Length: 126
Image (cartoon, rainbow, N blue to C red):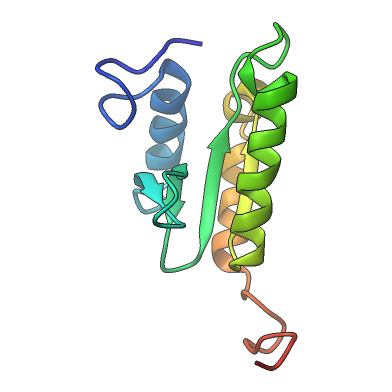
């Protein structure tokens, strides 16, 4: 996976650039890039639609033992995605294949069109 130029938040990986192109070509609204969802944590979603609480995480280097598939990286991702889910986010995790074959765009369209809950209310009352 191509690393971001200039560190996190500046530029995009090659795969994120492809994903953004596919989103634009599908006529979907542009997402927010590198959205921080749990301040003061530094966690960020690769691509996000904060109003809909939908995010896309692009997992690179899946087949070559990249950070997302090894011990500490995988554990940290589980914590991040668990926290996002607990806060009501719907996270679409995508591989390169899913970006390239249209699966990401299909899942994203469906997530943006779907209601967040059956009747819009929380499952547990405060």
